[in-house]
Length: 391
Image (cartoon, rainbow, N blue to C red; front, side):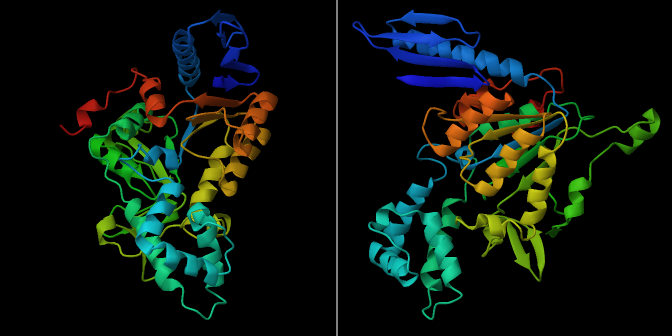
């Protein structure tokens, strides 16, 4: 075995197997010390404890500009919540039927050997491009696939606490600092449900009215106590407020009469989202997605800023390229990447490791979303938010 638990520059916590008889294992600590043992479990526990000690100490620092990027991994909880792309493909094959999906793929000239092993994003991308030129009507099957995606991405937070716990912790930042920002690539409303549960206010670009309309200028709004501000001659910011951006759209968004509105997803028949496909980059330059991406890019260029990426694969190039450029160009930017494993040999992981070693401002952590949130430092110097949670 050879497992990296945490990495920052040349420093890392690493557990490796040493050839020999009897079998032994070596633990490399963050400070460069080494420990050898024949008992794997003991060293695994020490490695996990050491990694968590390191990232807790690093994340206890207060950054002026604080952002989180949430990917699909934050909406997947084993078999009970969310679906991976492979799982979505299996559901599509089961419900649409293998024969219909093969005919659909053939009609758009999509090459495949085994329909059960295709890339669903590539299929949808080619289908959208082919619609312009095809004489055959592919919309029936295409709409079936989209309907399945929408249904499977409609998630209920239920009794889960990981999203509420994360928001509760980051909302303890001093309100006089710029608001914490959450950027998510997910269509679901798990963070919105979590915010409602703890009594948090999301500034999400939509008006505070019965029919909530999108207006990008609302991202520049904030909430203050007018009376306290007048008495103290300085702005008195209301706590429990954060800014929220959905880079790929939402199941709660819909285009009506050329206006983008937000409402209960159960009332929406055609949500405004960027469906999984390899042309996300092009679609992200259409509003409201362009506005969201502009705000995201702006955060990456600010001084004394941190971005915590959790559950993001780094395969979406229009997102990953922006982050990589910030690492290289902004000396005051710090990137934290949480993935279940930073030990695979995929290109995104290899690139992140190289960036960490060459620039020193990329912290890589092997943790699940739930484990990371559980161990994220809880700054008790700010107002506790638990009293706002539902009983």
